[in-house]
Amino acid sequence: MTNAIAIGLVLVIGLGLGADAIWNDGMAGMFLARKFAALIEWMAFWR
Image (cartoon, rainbow, N blue to C red; front, side, top):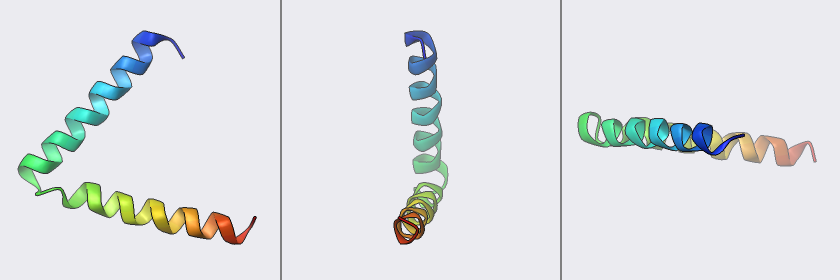
């Protein structure tokens, strides 16, 4: 991954989280965090 791609990804993710915080009170980010935590638990089961 080049530096330009990494910077672009950080900007896109940051803008998405910022827009979510402004227009949706951060609920989409919280939903994704909960689903990610459930995924980590599910993957730990298969370890």
